[in-house]
Picture 1 (cartoon, one colour):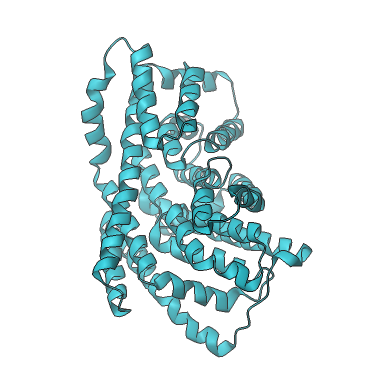
Picture 2: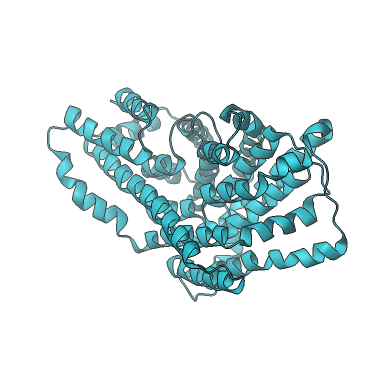
Length: 428
């Protein structure tokens, strides 16, 4: 049954179906082929159960927050400030790509929104300053992955919902790995540009006076981050309530900058509804697919098969990593997480691993999937903004950052305290 399931899923994705539709059709196909009872009768109830959790209300709110920041011009001023402060490093504006992605990730919670935003702002700089396109756009695609690791993160919310793990503690756990990964991306850029200066472009000069003035561009995202995250840890708001506070703050900032217009609100709401519809279809379809897997005994069979291998705890983790890397080449990361976490999390927790640590590991693996060919979502987002050349250029340019991600995953395994230190200090 497992080979048939994988083959059907790859076939459905290969013919270009949306991920949510592919998961739903796979579940219906397995129901028709293997189930002695009609499992389709449970679709309505499962759709309601999977989408009615109050925690999931934060998903469209965080998407709306990112949309408002994108369309109000705040992202442009953020990028300019990062340029002023980081352009002296080898690689110049590519460090601004990473730094801006980190700052935008701390407000939007979405990798796709982060990659799209920084792509729009940074793309004109390639020809203006003579950067190597492959590495420049690769740095944007990689930087965008930080959107699902640095709090607030939609993927961490979904993981907390799936495993009944504390979202605030997951947020705390994401801080240090996010900083380490961002620093790793910048180090990767610097090393490549030191050995191959031709891809590093022309440096932009900035005076200290202009640098200090540019700090005003960092204040809006910093203020929103303080409101969203600060309200959670001050005990004022839940993650869902903090997302709504962030939206109100973003609307206020847009009004201050004279960008709170009807077209801005309309476009932000339109983008939010499109992204939310896609995510919730994936959530409901993956929930039904998990139900079909469970009813057919596939989940218990996989658990027994893995348990029967007699793997050590670290062997189990390495096996799961290999599984995610392979699946990540073909599946949407969010769908992959919703389908697999209910199967893998009990095994990992029973092996003695902390669920908070496992959540960060899963998100890092999802980040890898976002930039792993052939179906890395951020690759297509960046290429869609670039609108020239082939996506193969983006795939080549992102490879050094994939290696960096693998190294950070190894660090998290060897030194789990990178993820667990903050929750142990602040979360208790």
